[in-house]
Image (cartoon, rainbow, N blue to C red; front, side):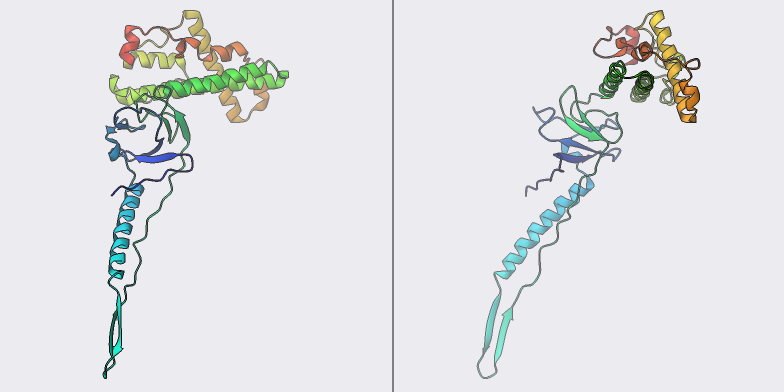
Length: 300
């Protein structure tokens, strides 16, 4: 008996990891189209056959559809045996059989709404997950670089827009671009360390590395992974980048405390577009990153 699993209103079908039991969705007809590739959990990376990722709701739905069809067919067969013999003879005895009942109900369900919609840069699978970072369920490529670059493009657009507005708005846009760029790189760095924590000398410490303080992150990454974080930059660019990250931290602290006066005071924090542009150097991005060194290969 073949039973079709319904899609949601955006064409997604739910999946549930048999290992970590977390939920995600994919769009059938996208991604790897040849052969029968396994499915990979975007959260824990567990890989298994596609039929191992049905959700509990889908299994219960399929079972209810099967039972509905079987009970419906059974009731139909019984109804074909119905009869009604009217009373006859001097005793007026009659006999009849009437079948009552309905097929077992179908347990319908709705797919859950998730936060992040992603199209894999490598295999073009369309999928959606909780949070932002994930492995592609088809090809297994992690999307951390993809998410980082998307956020950096938005920051660059803010910098471009800043040249077209008045001075007060310009300073806010540049500050936002710096803050967003640094936050994006911090998220990327944390996720990269989490994914590769098994390669570190201390996996627990590796998962706690923060990249908002670049000097501290440089020492921790070097110590735990044997990878030099500044290897793609010259000394001047590295110093500028560290200084930009520190300015971002001052801005974030000032905004959080609500001290708008000190935020506007140019003598306290001066942010120029060059700081935002250099906040996450172009050499750290996929589009222009240098050939990996032996140390970089070790970290990966």
